[in-house]
Image (cartoon, rainbow, N blue to C red; front, side):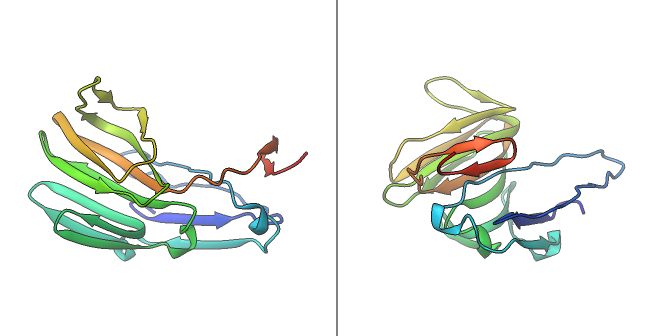
Amino acid sequence: RGGGAQWMSAGRGIIHSEMPTQDTQGLHGFQLWFNLPAAEKMLAPRYRDIAAADLALHDSNGRRTFAIAAPWGLGDVAISGPLFELVPQADMLDLSMPAGDRLVIESGVGQTLIAYVYDGSLADPRGDIAARHLAITGEGDSWELRAGDSGAGLLLLRGTPLREPIAHYGPFVMNTP
C-alpha cells in the first residue's frame, strides 16, 4: 500500500510475485537490492510488510522524515525506523526538505552515505544533484545536505561496505561462480 515498505531476504531461495497497487496519484516506488554477507546467503527466506502508519515520522518546519530502518540523529531530532531486519546491511530514511533547508547527516567509522534524489534537487558546491540522480560519499563522519530552490525529496542510505567478492548470474548474487 502507499507509503509502506516491504522487505524480503531471498536467502537460499524464494518465489514471489510483485503486484503493486496504484492510487489516483499513480505509482511512485523504489526497489532496492542489498548484497548479503557470505555467511547469510543460505539462510531461510524471510518477508515482512510494514504499513505506512508503522513507519516513524517526524514532521517539522517543512521537513518531513520517515525512518524506515535504523536509528538516525538529525540535528536535535532522533528517529528510528522499524525495519530492523535491514540493519546492519543498510540504514534507510525517506526525507523531504523545503527549499534552502540544511541538514547534517552523521555516519559511523567506515560507513558510506548514499542519497537518491527523487524530487527537486540538492545544492552542492561541486554542482547540483538533480532528481533521478544518486550521490555517494566516501568514508567520513558527516555530510551536509542542502535542498535546492524547489526543495528536495530523497532516499538516504547508510551502511558499511562488505568488501567481499561478488559473482552474479541472473538474479543470483554469490561470492564465487
